[in-house]
Amino acid sequence: MWKRLIRLWSVVRSDARLLWHALRHPQAPLWLKVGCIGILVYLLSPVDLIPDVIPVLGWVDDLLLIPWLMRQLIARLPLDILAWARERSGGDAAAGRTRRSVFIDRMR
Image (cartoon, rainbow, N blue to C red; front, side):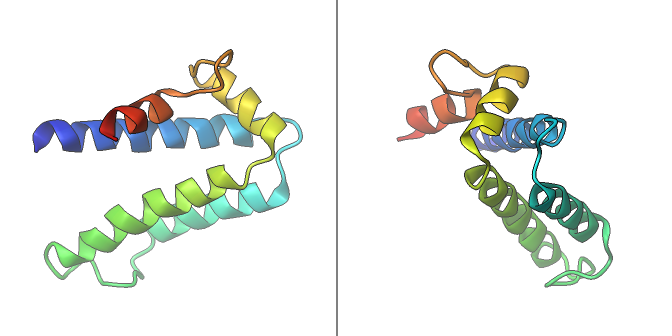
């Protein structure tokens, strides 16, 4: 179980790195910037769907919602910005694959 959690953490970390590099692209769209700021505000805000003072359940919404929102932003990136971000974030640009996609292939 710990191995799976460590792998999932590495996937979220690589998604965050990919979004960071996409934000640094000169032609990054405004919706990407607004979406990333919205994710950060939600993560740091004391107002949540389920308050964090409720043990475990308060953290579950953050653990599920934040990675899902990150994936939604990545899925909507223009292809040229996505390729540029993958190249900068250490993904295999020649194959068009990141470490995340290799991990997901292994999980199937």
